[in-house]
Amino acid sequence: MSIDEQLVRVLHEKGDHFISGEELAETLGVTRTAIWNHISRLRDLGYTIDALPHHGYRLAGIPDKMLPDEIRNVLTADSFVSKIHAYDRADSTNDIAMRLAEGGALEGELVVAEQQLKGRGRLGRNWFSPKGSGLWLSLILRPSLPPSAAPQATLAGAVAVAKAIRETTGCEAHIKWPNDVVIRGRKVCGILTEMSSDMDRIRHIVLGIGVNVNVDAGAFPDELADIATSLKIESGRELSRLALLGAVIQRFEEGYQEIRTGGFEALKDEWISLCDTVGKHVRVTAEGRELDGVASGVDFRGNLVVRLPNGMSEHIISGDVAVIE
Image (tube, rainbow, N blue to C red; front, top):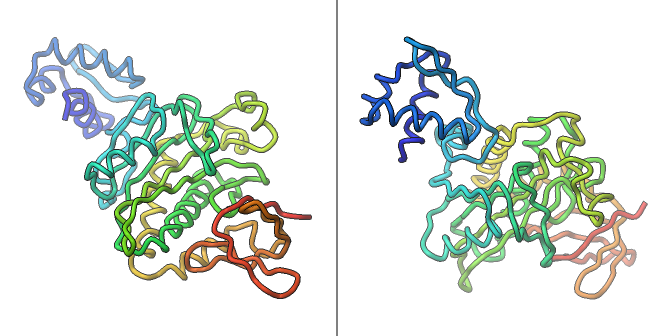
């Protein structure tokens, strides 16, 4: 752990109380001049640190940035997040996480970035990931499940994000199959799940989540202006990305535990309760064809079940779904 990280941790532990530079220097094994230099560097990162003669230093405010120590502070004590890889800029957190997973990274390793330069969505689409205004993250998972069960992780991610948004903002977030979270019909979150597997077992899954948190209305590119939104737009206020991240991870861990212990039916019921696609007349575009029918639910693989006018049902693995009014 770096001196900066140790210093932040000590200041957090002191809470509203001041701690002298001398005590900090002794605790961290550096000089008082070094403490001052590290305090200055932390202020440059966005930390608000009060300083009073004869009293020392006190942490008065933290930046809403994806810094490992601040992420750990919003995770539960028993969180399965095992390691945090934080970047100011990254081409794609999923690409980084896949490389880490292929190199032996453990379950629960988390990759976050302030900005993605080449963020990816489903079907090869780009994902708009401006700096400092969203959650751009990827989780490495190693469940003991067959490859056919991998889509369950996507469903668990969608449930986690929708619940976390409702809890932290009060906005009525819903799920749109297969991997979007929407508010008032506009997309606020996308999920991209990628996998490496053998014939009978999953080697690893990378679950990528992108949430538009504090993106301003005028910041979206023209092609997204009419279909995308952000939590700031919907709630009318700036929101803590760290608080949302903590809630998303906690809710995902709950759903993931259900998947790993054979409780997918309970998770599926929760997904259906949050989904604005199920029960609706839909048009599905998949594999070069269009199907009209009623979305009746999802199967154990996470595929959308569409009941056709002839009474037969189709199980849709992937595609675009539009609700027909």
